[in-house]
Length: 420
Image (tube, rainbow, N blue to C red; front, side, top):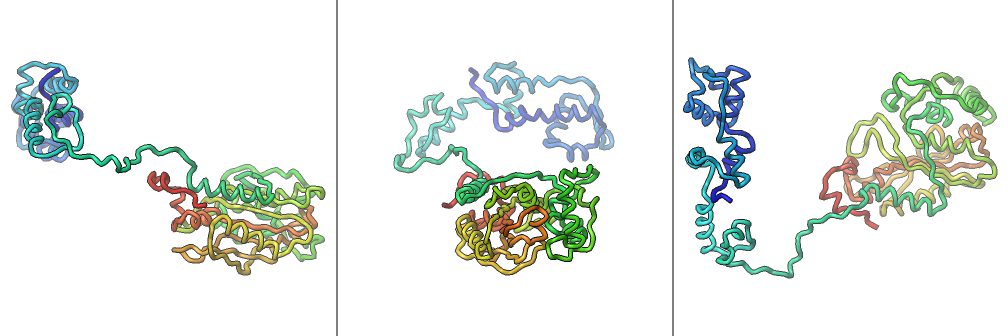
């Protein structure tokens, strides 16, 4: 083992290359002026000094020229060897000492020895152990009752994931069955089956994300499509006057699902009389062309739910919503107000109080209209709601910006847990 080591500057040159070596390689590619060299590289003055000293370059009218195209830099190899504890050529070593790229270890030991005479130390360093200086060191007292720094972080579910799982458990506990549906949906299920007219504003470019250059969806149940068409055009047997028209070709176009209610329509179309009463929920991603801010994202998670059965009314709906929202968020204040949705009547909008943002809309709900249920083959009341899981999670986790639910802040992710 050698009795010398690299200085801080020597270690920098070992990693990044000697300044003169870097400048030599730069000049092999391009002819540069002194000003350009000083702008392009660090330690430019040192590089120019050593290349001039070795007679590798010449300066003329501020321009730098290479005198030789070939040049070796044994000092660079020497720095690498010293870092590994290997011996090097004495002449090269002397140059490195002069450039203060290498220092003798005993100089460092002597300096450390003087420091140890004046102050106590709280930790033993490698050089103290190697040289035996630890025997002379005065150790500072240690309080063994102080809790050690937490270093290991155990794995766990994401806080937002915990909220979603908590909602899922509560709904399953209430007798709901979880369902799933496609993210790429047909206009038919996303809008038409929900009695939303072909020219409804929600289908415009400012709300829905359409699938570009895609094939049309397939019509699997022509009788169902026929009933929906009749309902749109003249109300069919629902008692409605309908919208007066319906665009069959538009209904086959594909889009990114903008609401979980599309899955509710799919579920109702498959129910048989013996399946009723029935309770279904979905927690999954939906997409809308929203302006991103503290309460909105272009893609977000929605909790869709329906209850199908005889004698259901608005009071039952509000009971379900209040039970779910309070149980999930722990919000002390929840309220509902009348609203409008094309597929429910009556319609209700739910709001929960956020400590910093105030009253926050958490979703819409209502009782499906006959124009929705009858074409789908359902003759009993259907309670329906769609809740924004992200906003519920904001209240539960004490977050005032929905974007923070997707944060990569490791400290927050490690420390934050779902408050029971």
